[in-house]
Image 1 (cartoon, helix red, strand yellow):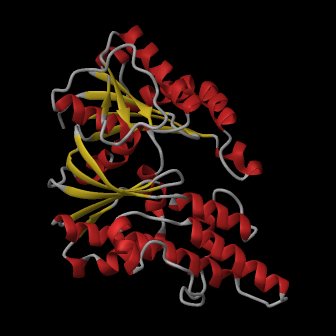
Image 2: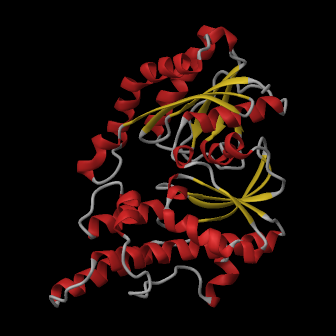
Length: 347
């Protein structure tokens, strides 16, 4: 398989990722996670994450090069997440990428983290027909994107107005006495009846359609779960953890799927890509499989290992940008914690 040989660095949150691709062929995807350092805090601590990136960056880079079996001189480009994300964490990755590009005399591309979550599917399933819709769901982001060109034309048509889906999972896990991160543990705990408790579906009422048709809200759902549990415990009413977890998860996934498929209809597209850490959720995947065919929508989701933050997604986006003939970023570009998805490449 031909194409540019690109090394990608990702450090936007708590994973230090380095990936290497040749076009759409994945050669290496090494990840060092600092999640265990954050467990006792119940969430990511920016300073702890930044220090972990500093310690993990060089070993992870070396493992990726060794796994791919290449020398830096063979690379066509270096790509790095420039935003959005935690400022300190981003700065570590950008500094490392600049050092590598300078030492190896390679062009450098500062790229958008969210666009990377879309581009990574190219490594699993190849080219997507454009335009298409992308649903990105993670601890920090819940967005609907209209993708006209992965290398440079992405429009955000919907986002969360408060908590992201993954953030709601983390907070509800804490309410239920479960560990961090909440996504995997709630997915595992959701063994009960998803219809046992009628938790609210945020921004789905008729009154919300004009202003928030494609936006999301999970703060009210999180509060509803907390109040339900508090009431049950205050009244000493026994309840099944599996029912609460399943009902909460059903509310989240029902909203995500309903709004994503509605957006496909609104914009006249028949392909939906799902990315981000919550894309690995079993109920989200099964609900999409149930409902998408009736809507005439083909759903694509990368393998679970490519849904969470990783360097391969930045390398894949870098390869697409290089192939499109876009120029490298300016040497003086910096990290941007709130980088909008419309800016696929910075500088």
